[in-house]
Image 1 (cartoon, helix red, strand yellow):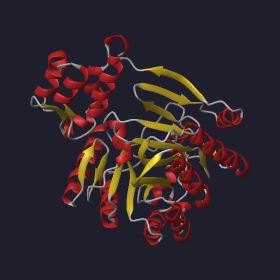
Image 2 (cartoon, protein in one colour):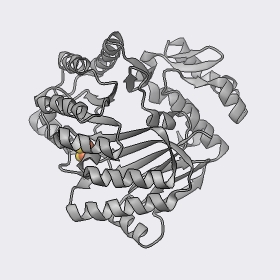
Image 3 (cartoon, helix red, strand yellow):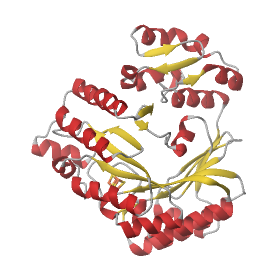
Image 4 (cartoon, protein in one colour):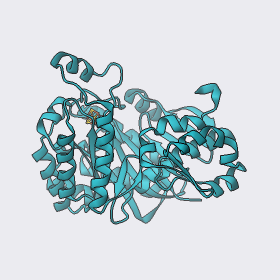
Length: 379
Ligand code: SF4
C-alpha cells in the first residue's frame, strides 16, 4: 500500500478575488477558531494509524491561520496517522500574509514546503484580478519564506489574463526564473459564468488575447523553464531538483488521500466521499459527534479505470499500459485505439506500446483527447 496523502481545507480569505470559484469565505475570528477545533476533531476521529507521507494545507488562504493553529493540526495528523519522518508538509500561502517571523513559526510547526500564490509579476495584472499584493510584495514574500527556514518553494502563475500580451507573460516567467523556486504551476485563467471579473472586463473593455496567443504563452513558458533547468512533469507543473509535488502526484497516479474540512474530497481503497461544503454545516456535523461525509460511494471497475487513464495522461510520463493491463485487465490501445488514432496522426499523442502520453501541443487539447476515456453515455 502506498502511503496516504492528507489534505486539510482552510476556507478563509481576507478578500474575495473577482475570478475565484473555490470553496472559501471571508475570514472571521470566531468562525476560524471553531473551524480549527472541528478540523482537529475530524482528523483525530478518522485516524487509524495508516501510513501517510504528505500533508497539504489548501484553501482558501491557509496562511491566515496562526502558526500555533497549523502546529495543532499537524500534531493531530501525527497522533492519528503514521506520518513518515520525511513527509512533505505544504502550506498554500498568499504573499500579503507573509513575514519572516510567521514563516519561522510555520517552519517550527512542521511546514517544510510553501506554495505561494503569486499569479503575476505585473501590478496592473494583479489589480485587474483583485489580488491584494503587488509584484514587489510577492518577491519580498518569497525571500521571507526562505528567511523563515522553508527552502522548498513553489510559485503559482496565471496566464491568459485580461489585457495580458505575450511579452507581459514572458516578463513574468523570466521574473519567476530569477526568483528560482523549486516548483512552479502555470494555470490558465478560467472565467466561470458568474465571475465578477466578467462584468469588470465588459465595463472596462479589457480583452483576452486570441486563443493562439494563449497557446504560444503556454508553449513559450515551458521552453523557457526547461532551458532554466526545470522539467515539466504534468500539464501545468514543472519542478527542478526532483521537487515535484509529492502530494499532488497522488491525485494523478491513483494514490489514496483523505480530505479534512468543508468541501474536501477523499479517495481511498476504491471508495470516494466528499465533506459538506458549508463551513457552518461542517462544524455542526463534527460537533454533533457525526461525520460530515456526503456522496460516499464505491467506484466501479470502469470508473477507476477511466480515472486512472484520465489523470495519468496529465503526466508527461503518460500512462503505463502494462500497469493498467495488470491492474484492470484491459488492453488500452485495443479498446480506445480507434478513437485515439486521429490524435496520434496529428502529433498530439504518442503511443509506443508501453506508454501512452500527450505531446506538448496535445496538452493544449488535453480535455478533448481525454473525453475518449469517458463512457459515451456521459460525454
Ligand atoms: S485568495 Fe485564492 S481562494 Fe481566496 S478568493 Fe482569492 S483566489 Fe480565491
